[in-house]
Image (tube, rainbow, N blue to C red; front, side, top):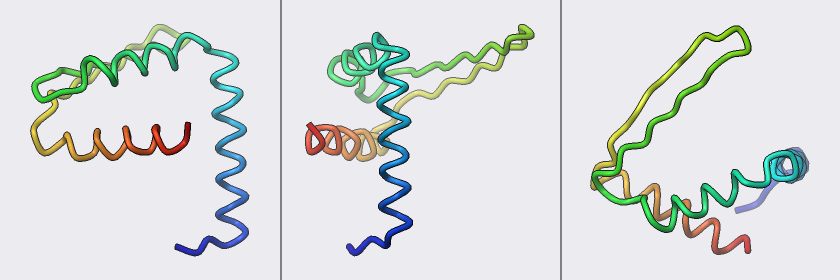
Length: 83
């Protein structure tokens, strides 16, 4: 796969943003790592709640299905190739 200059620049920008996010929230990557190793299996329920500064809440959840596991496995392989 050939990448053009704009795509390479965007990947570098994303990496910089990810590095800043990790520095600002050092416990979050540890949480994600623990969850990905121990909890990402068929039947797991993932729930996300977002609260705005004004106090408005948004909440959603999904229950992982067998066919979702292909995406999870792909994401895991990305992590191992980038370490």
